Amino acid sequence: MTAKSLRAWAWIHKWTSLICTLFMLLLCITGLPLIFHHEIGHLLGTEVEAPEMPDNTPFASLDAVMAAAQGQHPKSYPLFLFRDIDETNMWTVSFGATPDAEQASGFVTVDARSAQILNQPNFNQGFLYVMFKLHVDLFAGLPGTLFLGFMGLLLLTAIVSGVVLYAPFMRKVDFGAVRRDRSPRIKWLDLHNLLGIVTLLWLFVVGFTGVINTLAEPVIGLWRTDQMAEMVAPYKNEPPLTQLASLESSMRAAQAREPAMRVAFVAFPGTDFSSPHHYAVFMRGTQPLTARLLKPVLVDAKTAQVTDSRDMPWYVTALLVSQPLHFGDYGGMPLQVLWAGLDIISIVVLWSGLVLWWRRRKQPLEVMVREADAELDSLVTARQAL
Amino acid sequence: MSTRRELGEVFRWPIAIGVLSAAGLLSALVGDALWDVASWSLLSVPLIVALIKSARRTRHQAR
Image (cartoon, rainbow over all chains, first blue to last red; front, side, top):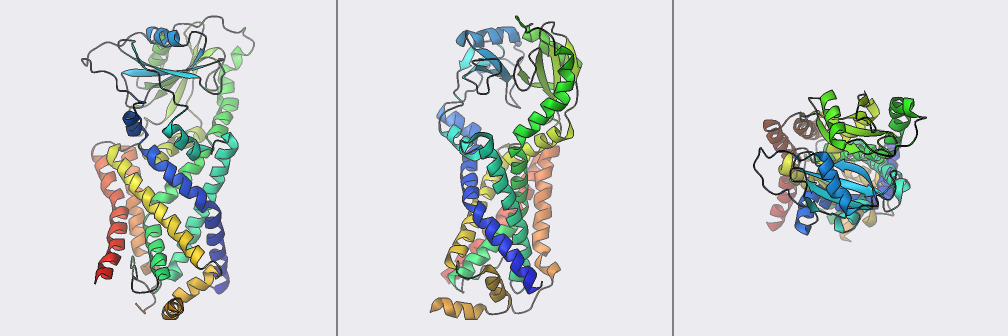
């Protein structure tokens, strides 16, 4: 590598890292509890399990489930009916002050078999909510999310430039060697190089999919104005609905349209995911590869007849595939633990980078590389010792 | 320690670990059961390398 390009890469690594490091530390630290949000929710008592019942217990009508939930919020409008990916025995309904409310004002979890109310969680407060907001938008809405996405792009740049700088640093050093017999700085440097290079791929994937996730809102907006707008166009001039058709019949109609799929969630008429005249029943596949992919089936909310159903466009599919790769929630508890371990190592990489910069902030990074590269280690060590 | 390494040598282990990590990330995505077990084993590699290599430092220090 020429001295000029070395200097350029060193400059890139220094500045992209410096700008994003504090935010990345925040994301790594708040992300840690989010990996285990279900487990923590159970510990805190904010999440419940459906009671044990014989396997062949029939499901209650969704209309009964809705009636039970609506009873807790008689003056509100249902927004979404949803459940976890592996859950079949309970549904959670979110309610809003208006049919198109941006934020839910209440949640009711109902047993899918007995239609009994199990829980009224408040997802908009508490420890996990604070961690979630700090991780997702810094309590600043879409601008906060996009800002974090930009920080993520800086992280990806820092990773790439870090790999480029890894080569000159490691020319004379065995892979993974941590030279404890040299100065503390050399030790931090070796540690930074070792931990950075082994977690490289994981951090790049989690960083990249995180950046894609920050685009969720614009991506969904694009789908709404693109495919969704086409699907509901015939209803543009219909008068507003006064009464909704049976949810149970609507869901059965959607299930009949996609018999090989399972219901992931239902968007009630008026939300960002439906239209004022449709239930949108989002179906998912049953295989590991397809379980994360959604297909909306639009059901006329007056007649409970399916009106349209289309595969999601590529950009929504990309978003959906990137989610498990960011969350680490697709391979059971062992994968969550590995995610946490790799997250902690990434925290050490960020921290060691910060330490290295702080100790030698008056000395350009490329000088550091040169020293490490040009067999001047002993000189450096001698100077450190002075 | 004093010999200069070629690029291929410098990146031999990093590339191997990267390939194993990528296989680990993907395998849990395509299947369950054995695919999950494969994913756990493969994704353990970067963690184990990191732990062993950075622990070696303390062992030297104790000398």
